[in-house]
Length: 205
Image (cartoon, rainbow, N blue to C red):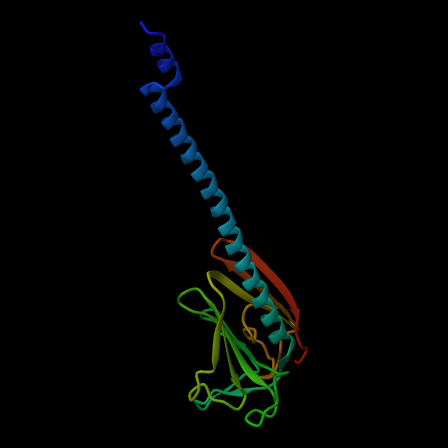
């Protein structure tokens, strides 16, 4: 048999060798894709977690500034009722109070605003504010969402007899302008992560 015949056989690949090579290449490609997918997924989760943490810290800054400037100023709700300077909703989460330190403009020369915190049906912590001269009956106020995915939020208020979720405390003899001495706020997110802050209040019994 000619010598060139054996040389040609040794220089090429058999069909089985080609199939095995393609199989190995396919397995390596799948593993490489999965590795890249894992890295990209981890990177995306990291960015999402960072964005959520930034939102939470921003919310704490806003809540802290509001509570730092609470004022013993009552508020007309526009429905013939005068609200206390600081009050909570005992049936569900809700906190409303008067806040100073705002811009003093012609429509609101005192710079005092009425602030309302509540959870909506989508489990979003929302903040609404009105100028002290406005009426909720005539104005929807300025509303924006602070945090999404809030499982629970608790405001605890330090009064003459200790902490209470209700303000004014039940069966208390505090005046309508009374403010908490300390306010402890605890926020629980949907992933059960809990974050809490303690803020100084204003002694005004």
